[in-house]
Length: 205
Image (cartoon, rainbow, N blue to C red):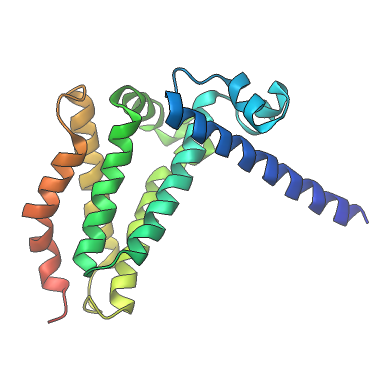
């Protein structure tokens, strides 16, 4: 019986956390992070203010959870994207940059500052964000092999590292510029001019 109660409690806790993430995502999309308060988040999903701190230490932490959710959705969309493997990969990379740009350069700069040293990251999701992004790209590239679009000898790990490092490098340069140009458009330019050259050797005839 005790085990059943614990399981039920965990399920209820998971549902509450999901409700908080959903409410925060809606509010941030409507009015931005700066204008969204914790009290607004808890009010929208019908829980007490203190409940928020059961799951998150800071308002910014819920954004990390939203980010994981959004990138998982992006990965699923890329997998089902109609077109060639190269087009699916372009879709993922460009929309990866687009989401970060839409979140704003200030937020991106703050995220980089707080996560560049994983040992100092305040949020568990941020500590593993690099591995998370690498795994998404590994899975996307592996799907190309499984579907017969890529040669089996493609170096999945090396290619996924190259692309993530490129995305992160472009993001950092965008931060340094204080957002004076479009991160999305810079990534789109790379996809149009250079990505085909990188992928071509691995494509099946």
